[in-house]
Amino acid sequence: MDRNSNSYTLIFSSILVIIVALVLAFVSQATKSRFESNQSNEKMQSILASIGIDVERDQAAKLFDNYIKQSLTLNADGSINKSVNAFDVDLHKEIKKEASKQLYPLYIAEKDGKKFYVVPLYGAGLWDAIWGYIALDSDKNTVEGTVFDHKGETPGLGAQITEKWFQAQFHGKTILSDSIAGFNETNFISVKTVKGGAKVDDNHGVDAISGGTKTSDGVNAMIAERLAHYLIYFQNI
Amino acid sequence: MEEKESMFSKKNIKLLKDPLNDNNPITVQVLGICSALAVTVQIKPALVMAIGVTLVVAFSNLIISLLRNFIPNRIRIIVQLVIVAALVILVDLTLKAYSYDISKQLSVFVGLIITNCIVMGRIEAFALANKPWPSFVDGIGNGAGYGFILIVVSVIRELLGSGKLLGFEILGHKAKTIAESTGLYTIGYENNGFILLAPMALIILGVFIWVQRSINTKLIEK
Image 1 (spheres, one colour):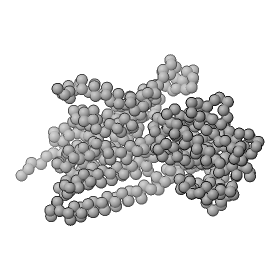
Image 2 (spheres, chains in turn cyan, brown):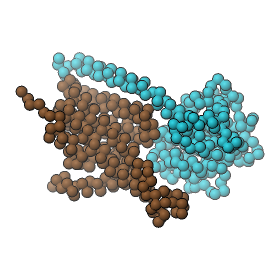
Image 3 (cartoon, one colour):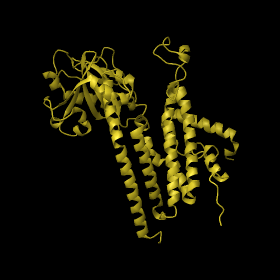
Image 4 (cartoon, each protein chain N blue to C red):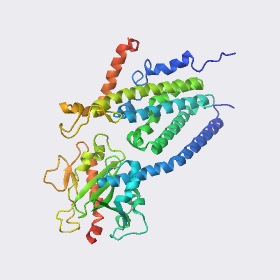
């Protein structure tokens, strides 16, 4: 057969593509369950890290139930949605819906007899998605810890949000301007990264990342936007 | 009748050895620099990347060489890309399932093996015109030459940048204060943070090329 004819080229490329597609589909299916369990273990690991428990990824599933006492899915009005498991809520999909129709997962953890509220975060950095978890004390005001991760922030600059020094700064900061005035929009000021460095007495600010301003801004926006939806629930309990 | 060539004939051994020094893909041909700078902060990801690239080069060479008499010339490059891309996806899926942390560290660079000039370069320059076995050996040789440089650079960077090798603290433990530290850090030694950034990888590569050329003088262009 003439190797330069159109029909030969068409047949050759069709067969090639079919074989390649079959091989890839097969391997993708074969590795899918392992990949998904890796992802879910990593999620548990991050949630535990936000309340200060560092575990290996493969240990996370075992310890998760020891510390996370309740997983709640909240509606926008602060009521509890019993039909959806909080762990299965995919924020990447939720965040595209209108705020009033979204589901808001919340994890209630207990460590050394103390209660913590872990709020999952999801937002946009400079290049792509950023996400993480913020753990609040039992007063739902003081930050216990944070965990951040990202898909494609600049290595060495914005990507530093995954580093301990950045995340640890949030510990002890507060999200309300007045701890007694309650969880309403005027009293809620969230925690922010401050370009040029936060002042020592700033209860709501931490140092932003030099050279990672857009990513730092993304972290601010993400924390403020996500936490705002939980105020109504926090007010009512 | 054509005389049958042995599997490890002088010619084939040369294919394996040449890319390690005289014809190294990174330091002599200056291909695949991008990933060489990006994944050499620590040894472990560099090692995995080296293995990944070696497998992709070797098997894409092998497959293309097997198909070389059937590939329509007009869509040659597309066919090569399909084969290389499929192999890279296989490496990526395997890493995601069996070595999740390293796959996160390597992030986009696994996907970018597709664009690594070494892969397409070897297919075009060698596999299309040679038999399957020599092509496979050529792929292994070039992958090893690439990996060798990656490992040399990453050993230097991890040791000077973090004071570790493969994650083990070689130079002692660095704590917050000198009193709590051990090893070299007790006399005030500091890790060089600059080594961890990409520009230093480029400088280390440059120094490596300089050293290589002063030993192997036939590489110097007249």
